[in-house]
Length: 265
Image (cartoon, rainbow, N blue to C red; front, side, top):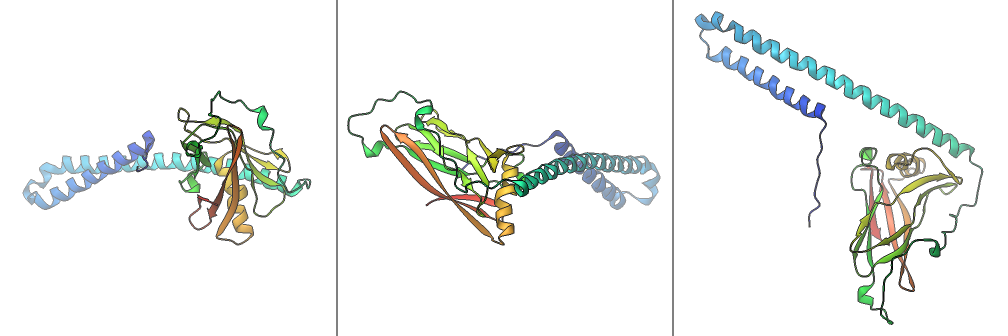
């Protein structure tokens, strides 16, 4: 089934489009009058000529104001982003070395479960089927679309106590992307966009967003190692009745088109 695409436009974006159309109409009207009005009738049409010219100039002036406002907002966001990235980079440089392996996940017994009755012998056809899907939008839009992955329950019994393995920086060291545990997924709750945070030497630094993950982990790994493609193995562990199941995936970052991709490992 094709994925639905949701488009949203700001009022100023729509106004700019409308003004562009209005300018085009004025230009066409001026061209029409210059080609089809007889020279003797031209003085009678001067009012329309001036009206079209003034309207077109007014539209262009308002477009310029709107463009200035958008540029100013974009510059402010980029300044805030650069300040945050500078803070994270400083934290990376001053981080106290710790063990490079992620901290052990909490016990499965800590998480909320749902009551499910299973037969004495498990039917493999009812085994939970999960799928990890990456944010398919270009990374430059992640600040507006702030999630990395979506975990989807495709069928079978409920999957409980779901844990997504930490993504460790490809350069090693003290940098991870860590995910919050998910109590369960089933047919009534078929998908979720897992919450995550950036961990630098055991500290949660800065605001957690997909945009920060792009600059601090993925793009930084590729740039510093001069790689076009960087891969991260990720395991998803969940409980199915009395059995612990591990699904393995390979998360790939492409520096060429700045997109994440996920494939079964």
